[in-house]
Length: 165
Image (cartoon, rainbow, N blue to C red; front, side, top):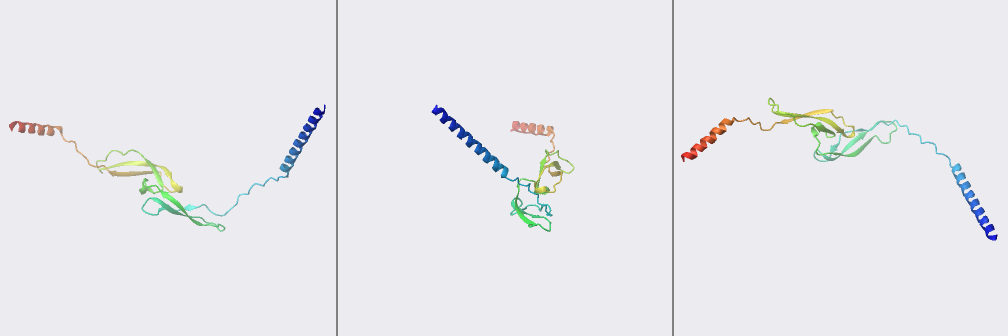
């Protein structure tokens, strides 16, 4: 009997402790004030306008670009940013424009050039790139087909010379 009474007291104490903990948690949550939403800072600063990437040395690799923006209350109106010009891009179309090129076309016998077109694949830093570009290169050596008869005649002539010797 005494054991049951001791168990009831322990159970009651545990129950009261649990209720006390729950009450403490709920009052701390209720005491917290909800933070007002952060107001977006309205600024009269314009968007950054970036110059083209200028390589440190050569015509590709690491370099820098200058950024500017306007606005009366802007803390910063110019800044310099590191950039990189890939060395395998076709620089004649702008170092910040990458194109996907088609296969070379047939050789134009009038101009001795073959051409192919490229479609804009990617423009770095909002560069102003043409949508499509066309490049051309020399065809290389143009070989005229030789008539087969002349080769046969030469071979026959050599055979006859050997027989005579």
